[in-house]
Image 1 (cartoon, one colour):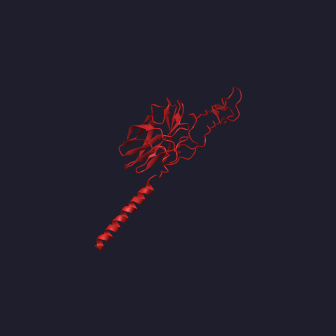
Image 2: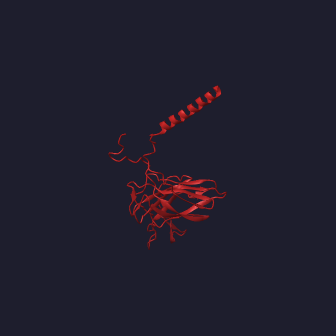
Image 3: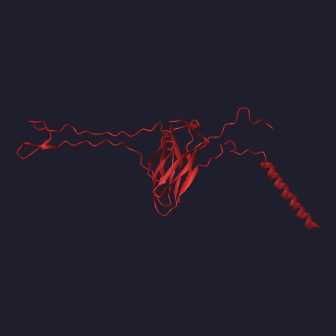
Length: 231
């Protein structure tokens, strides 16, 4: 009888502890309750290359207006034993520009990140400076300054020592291996949360077209005014 009584005591105690834990958990509000639900980005595969979590960065005002610029985020993973490369990204929604080292070595990943300084306001083409040689053709009757002369003292035909200056080059940020920036410019129509666009990723080994959504905001959702009444 004593053994039976001890067993009943232990069973009663276990049930009480379970009920107490359940009561403590009831009514608790998770810290993530005010966050927007997570949205998985678009994904696809090109053989051993995985295209994962591709999204358009959340726009500052919640919508991409026609003609605006968007940043593409995501990850490319090469699980093959051979190296590959991201050749291009195209979309019917606009023009895609890739900046950085597009190589995708075997067993490595390529991160699509936000460019330094945020989203560019407009797409600007790099200006090229063309240098025209200075007027170095010798005038009749007298050699121009710096013209080469033959042993007899007469200027040689068309030979000058004037050098053409090289075009100036702009200093660029060092390329970070494993990271690139992908920017979609000239968006043709409005893009907001809940809508997707198509992006085609082309590698040396093949290509894949996937639907790409707009990312959700990373800040907590503000509670409605007057909501959350007391018990």
